[in-house]
Image 1 (cartoon, rainbow, N blue to C red):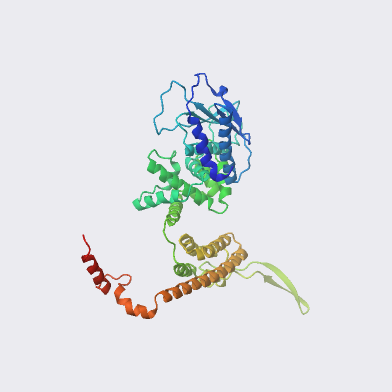
Image 2 (cartoon, helix red, strand yellow):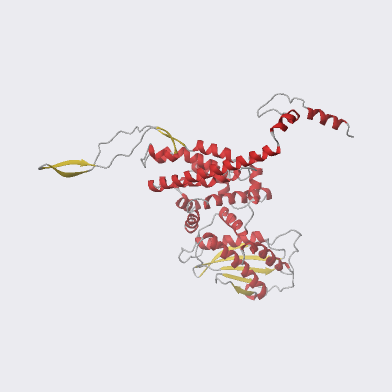
Length: 476
């Protein structure tokens, strides 16, 4: 099934279940037609075989896309049963605009789990809610595969609602604008909930506007987690590491870092996520010239003097013959070099090659690069990414890889500078041809304006006087 057709097909298939036909009160699950998906995990029940097969196909499409996005294998342990019944003939009629409620449950059958999604139609089932229900159910099955036989009343691992909401949006391939606009409005009104409120919510709020903002923040959170190094593998560990009776934060910290266990650390990271999300709504990025200057400033590195006391060198004894005698002297590798001064990240190894001290020295530069990456001109984004990756390998204590990436970043920066100069020269030549110097001298007074920061009253120009005469002659 093609991914972009998933939500459209879900809407079409779910719509056919709104047809109201007479049905006896004895119509139960056992009397419904059953269709089993190609994976064997999905068991769909409906009023006839054709509709059951369509329902199973939609669920299998969601399942295959979720498995591919998470990067997990197609194995499964517990079945997922989807039951769509017709509303009993004697029940109250649905009002226009109503939606059929979806009931998601899990039961233990002979000690093994079975997940179930049920609905009665008409009214119709909302396609987006159905995708979210299937995604949540499949994620719950993944999180509980490690459980042995489950007795009645035993707890199971719970998947956090924010993850289900964000993954469902991924399956629907929602446009980025769907996330940007609600965040833009929330930023303008200063109404962005903090990390704790978003992640501890039981699901989308009842208020439609608040629900849209909640979904946008879930999307931004998942995007930030997925964007980390090995982010998809960390998301897998998080999902499969959920345990019954434990907060999801335990598995989250194990997958993404202990820093999330501290409220201050989590909120600080969340504020950075929101700042990056806000950068998406900036109508125009920095110019190439602005990015060039900001990058030059960001690459400045200050190497402070080494104030740690020097320990006596330790090594092993080596010997050599000197004349007729064997001479012993201590042999040890040269100590790391550290010379205080101001340099750039490209040349920092010339002043300091101490792998233990360098991460702290370049920490400020790393923060500047990450802060400017989202707003930088496209010519320089690859350059900034290479510098950030170089610092990553420095933190991994891999100086050769760090130095190699610095060389690549410097070469990419030189190429970006050449391209920037070429663009500036071309634009300058076009402006000169369209507005030559002699014309500027002749018509300059007509368009005279104050420069940036000029607070003086606007001066009267021939153009002002001309417009005044034209407007005075127009009929009001």
